[in-house]
Length: 445
Image 1 (cartoon, rainbow, N blue to C red):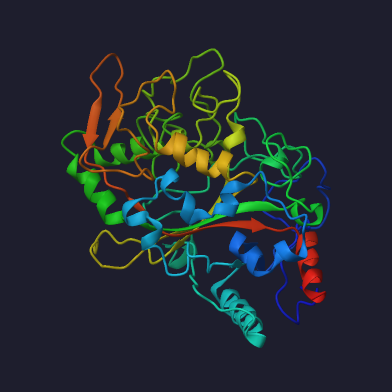
Image 2 (image 1 turned 120 degrees about the vertical axis):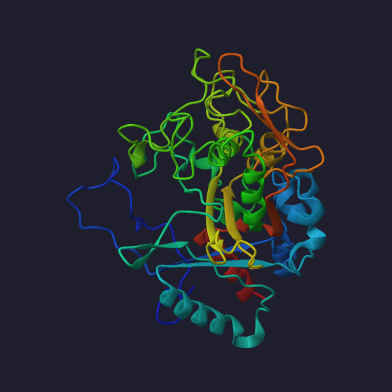
């Protein structure tokens, strides 16, 4: 990065350019509005990438001792997080999981035109001197819907649900977050800091400090299979209610915890309040048995809030130590129910950002998404897994929906895996200081 935008697009820094949030405690409400950049460019490096850069030879003190998962890589850890069968590394896009995926470059742009222009510039720069060999590229874009005769970006995913509602609040962050019963997360859960409680910052400090880790994933979504499954159980439960029970929210984002019977409650729920709820209160009240929102529902598994679950630090305490910052972007055209069998692949491109892959990303998938005993005292069926992202065997899979007033639960069976991993990589996201450190090593050889 030369610092010259006219030379080549620059790696995005942590400079205070962010927009879309209300002024925070350290902001001047009277200040001029912040500028939305045309693009954001980020770089991640896998462990094989660091080896290819000869970091071990040039930096004798190099150490990622707290981060065995990163060093092993996504392919070696795949089975432990449920990536088996069609999702196993042998079925991933060529290059991933084979040690050839060295650098992951992520470019976000404000418009399709900006994406094309900046992509062309970045690729032309990479081509100079044959310094890089591109093994894969994928474009994603927000799904569009027509409003007043014009296409407008939405926050929906291919399954039809509104996405991006729950975002971790970070202690000390400048922005104000929508109301949320959850405690703010410590910054060191997402950025490598000295004050962290469960890892040692990678050495040397110029490389590790203020960096982060991300799990990149490309997943294909089986929208047709999902919709067919809903319809196949219509004699037991209304398909849209089943969809809501499986996810924990109605497709428009309204949570079952606040509105278990309808996606349009009387008086409505403001968008800023859609994440302001709890499953189990400190005194044990609330919805401990999952009458409103099943304990096994997707959003309750991946973010159980204050509910007593496996891995909770203290009884009645927070589950924050396992939280993730998740960013996802759809690829492929929006699903059209009028032409369900179009043969077009559609899915999501994900970044799961965390400081400790084992304790955050892997823990959530292994213990909460794919384990029937994640909820402790609440006994789920032994074959129960996350109904949306769990690794399912249709011959034995089951999702149980508790009913009120002692009525027998509704049981639906034959769930398949509605998402299939097509590629995955564990990457280190170096700070700007670390990128300069690595670049200076190259000048010395």
